Length: 300
Image (cartoon, one colour):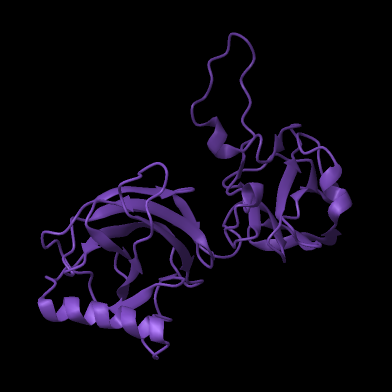
């Protein structure tokens, strides 16, 4: 990542930017960026390089995966004193974001903390990207970078021989279940269709790659990620026969309802589609293997 030294002028501009943000003055909002951070001040250009400032003590992400179009992915961390702000940037982006440091948390009672709500552009290309975090002190001096690798999944259904996609319209926790012709059920409790070989037969370490796999557990336990999408993907081959697709409403997460759509795609072409709605009564059903309402059945 290209870096620049933070001069006294840049440091002053940083402080001025924070004042402008608090006063409501119009400023660059970074709307063309790959990543945006709610409530943070945006600065166009490369993130300043280390200039003797404090270190980042820790960074925590709920998962190391993000999706194009995802809203509200949480990143938290602790900064060494005397940090007063955290700078965050997605490597290669058009600029960086500055968040004032908050009060210490119980895990690090003497270190200032930060909590960032990250959102990603729908046009963001898939693949690995580094989220770079630096602590900055009151004089505007950045500390060393603390990079965190994120794997970006592209927006829309992933490519595959056979793909089952569940999408919904509210910040609820719905789960996709797919039972394939082998009898394997792919869902958050069993994320791929691989099963052990018969006794005495050596397992194939690559067998799981030819089966179905769940790519994401969206809004898990009401930790809202803004995605509202789950896919079961048979990337290269899919067993022939009958497939059963169900939708389990784990929780509505204080929403009144959720309206969902299930699609089946073979080599990118829609071969089956169903819609439905989830209500509070649906959350009272079991949530393990076999759970959910029937959404779709297809033969391939």
